Amino acid sequence: MSSAKITPTASVLSSTIKNLGFGLHLPSYTVLPSNFKQRYGCSQRRLCIMAKSLASNPLEVCAKASVTIPNKLGDCPFCQRVLMTMEEKQLPYDLKLVDLGNKPEWFLKINSEGKVPVVKLDENWVADSDVITQSLEEKYPDPPLKTPAEKASIGSKIFSTFIGFLKSKDSSDGTEQALLNELSSFNDHIKENGPFINGKEISAADLSLGPKLHHMEIALGHYKNWSVPDTLPFVKSYMQSVFSRDSFVKTRALKEDVIAGWRPKVMG
Ligand SMILES: N[C@@H](CCC(=O)N[C@@H](CS)C(=O)NCC(=O)O)C(=O)O
Image (tube, rainbow, N blue to C red; front, side, top):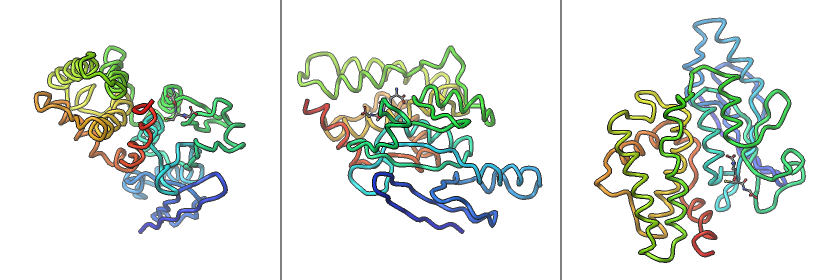
């Protein structure tokens, strides 16, 4: 049985989902991963104790708040990457949603750069999704999510070429072709090595790329009436594989937020 409670405060918006499987009194604003109970099922006493300890010390995470619906997670692909990593590793977290249009004082004290995501690890607030996900891998190695170095940059130019095409006002400037070239190389890689970048199992590179492909799909669909061509079926099946994972569904941005988030880039 689970219950959900949304509690807004002045400039922090936090979500609470309480999993009552352990009969624990969990701290407010704790999000337990969807299959936390199955994973730490009480059949083994040691695992049960470990699960209780994790549940009572959730990781604190600052992420972007929605601009369209109160108390919802916003449209930051770097935040989703971090949250997906926590979901895949079954780490309970305490989500603090930050209004980036009106950054609160407490948040700027945590991170003077004013960017999300930020996660508290060993009493220190850590910024930047690259640093955070590497730290999570070291601290919580199970399940391992590290992508081998030789595959870690597969698909890494898709996001920048998508932005170039999205911002383009000249249909013959080559930005669409640049994106298609990157997607085509990625299609070939997944065809040979898929279903994920490192083969059978999802890994860190997928958790970084998946949220960016979600932004690409929504933003280019909305602003350019564009979609991934049928000639790239492995890109499409890859997107479906990532987008259908529990860790993705639970942390994805709302379509309306993604559209609103990219508007200044399109108009600018
Ligand atoms: N390199 C950073 C990028 C983080 C980032 O750009 N976050 C955006 C939201 S998607 C942000 O906080 N923007 C606030 C601002 O620039 O004022 C990471 O990987 O975490």
